[in-house]
Image (tube, rainbow, N blue to C red; front, side, top):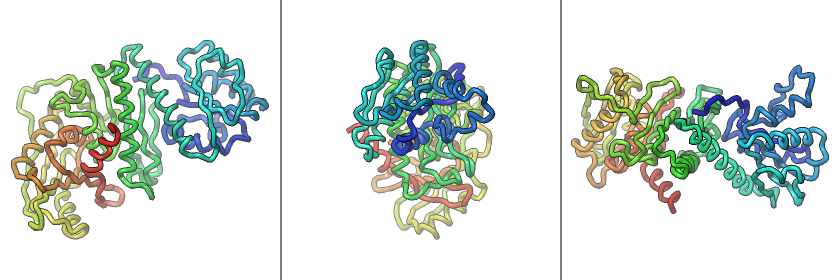
Length: 429
């Protein structure tokens, strides 16, 4: 966690009004990354309500309140009174604050002011104002630099690493950037206003690709900076299918193919599943009940239902109705895992591991991992359990995942292992 983060914004954008059309394209991308932690003057008018010294308030945004600054530099930028105030505030701060990241995006063939050349900054050039691809590349480069810088600062003061991943919100809200976390991966751009359903025209592989790129970059910088032995806290405020994919990419924490110094939570105040400190309980930990239901024998596929510490009471009937009457699925059997007790709080990491192992072993014992068979996984459980199961995915074989929308009370197919493995292969190509 970042200590004493007194910044109001992750990023402040400085630009001339004449360049607004170009800047809006970038601002939209930055807002997808940092949510409301982006300062863009026209969207933050309230900052200046009742202010007597407008110029001083403006300078304080760029001189103190933003962790990083992006300047869109152009001929018009040099001529404007307020942009000069913003620019001078950045120059003055650069001379004192070595942690400040300053990014200059040059619009057109305009030499950058000599004053800034004496300081450290990152420079980019927009060669074609109509190319969205160029915008996305520049934003991606800035994002990666900021991620590296945040993790580097954590290393310098020997801190644990906090990562928040959010795709789910309450209705009419958007994912939020937690300023005291080292990094956040926010997926609100893909979601409808109900905070759960995908927004047209997006599909689950689109969300997977965006999440995968950011998570791969996060892991890359963790290893580059030698932080792989530091404790990593991951907040999984996300769809269960995405938690499963993240576990696959992170690695098998049971066999220590992933970093064992890991803590998982569903929310920042939720149960901490600490895998870095396994506490042995005095008595055996309880396991889920398992019920086997016959299918329609139309194929060898198996339907697996996980009602573990969550999910509706009649989840087994809901899933069976959905499979038989909505998607007309052919399947051999249903394996229904049910656990309503509490997770052992003092041994939560160990308890979660053992539940995951129990589920995998039972699926194997019931013949569901034979060649040509697929598992259809319906989960009403904790994202942390899906993460651990994802790390063990090679023991499950082909899996089709389904999401449940509590607002509409409907199931929909989401990701399958082919999606996850395909993206994994492309990312390493």
